[in-house]
Image (cartoon, rainbow, N blue to C red; front, side):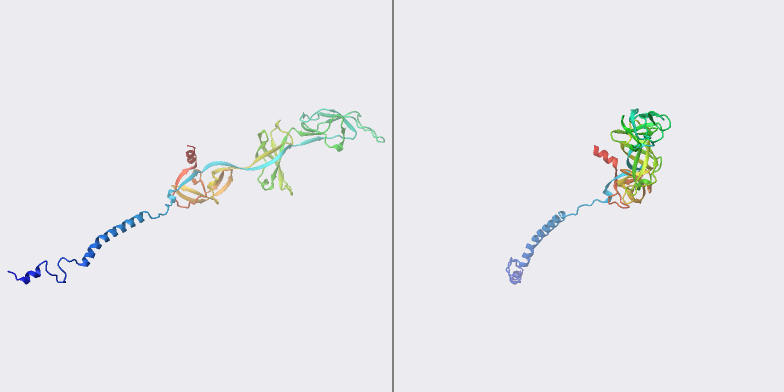
Amino acid sequence: MRDAASFQGNAPFGPRADGREPGQDDPAMNLTEYLKPAGTVLFIAALGVGYYLFEHRKRPEPKETQSEALVIVTKSTNACFSDLVRVTGFFVPRREAVVVADQEGSRVTDLLVTEGTVVTDNQELARLTAPPQIPGQPQRPGPQGPVSLKAPAPGLVTEVRTIVGAPASPQAGPMFRIAVNNEIELDAQVPAVHMSKLTSGATVRISRDDAPDLIGRVRLVAPEIDRTTQLGRVRISVTNNPSLKVGVFARASIDAKRSCGVSIPKTAIDHLTVQVVKGNIVETRKVRVGLSSDSATEILEGLEVGEIVVADAGSSLHDGDQIKTMFADELDRTRVR
């Protein structure tokens, strides 16, 4: 049998070595056991808050890269250009013949033509009374009857400045004006800066108010420029036309120079450079330009017919940028739909 001392030292209900009664808890152990589940909850809550903040953080706006940019392009074509010089002027006779009275004292007895009459050479225009004999002067040689005024050249009577019964005097100026051979042309004024471009034979389109356009050619480029106005003059011949009237105002476009070559829109050029697209890659090139129209420009060097260029040279593209392309005509069709 065990002794009583041995039994008491091992009994669960006996006094503990630290002086506490059996069954009394350790405070440190109690605190630890309490904090473990609380810490776990806090840790999980912190993870949840962190995840929420991460997912709802403010993100920068995604920037569209050049590879994503859609760029409108166009293809260079072959076209002809004209350097047009625009002028204004009035229709005048190419050559003019005038008829005047030879002596003082006569009067018009018969007027045989009117303005617009086409006359032949030496055709009678008017008859005048014989000039009175001046006392003290020798008698005039030849017949002393009525005087006949005749056309000095064939052509169109453009002006009649007399009537029946009117006195005829050399001091009064021409009684008749005739456009020789009925040739009427445009006398136009040209700014001095354009005079050096013009040559005889250049094609001209003439426009008049309320009348069909006419086609003419430069006949004469005047060698002198007015010092005051800085305007030169050109004569533009036209085919005889019954609708032409001397003194009528007209506008004209002179085709001073004509050239055919590579053509691209004006908007595709920026400081003498274009942006060529090859395999969706941008390449900047320098070009030499020639003539231009209202919407297009001629390219003399740096570009071939059929090459693709960026339609708007004002974009922020650079060499090597990769782009998506759409042709301008495709964009127009899309808009129509």
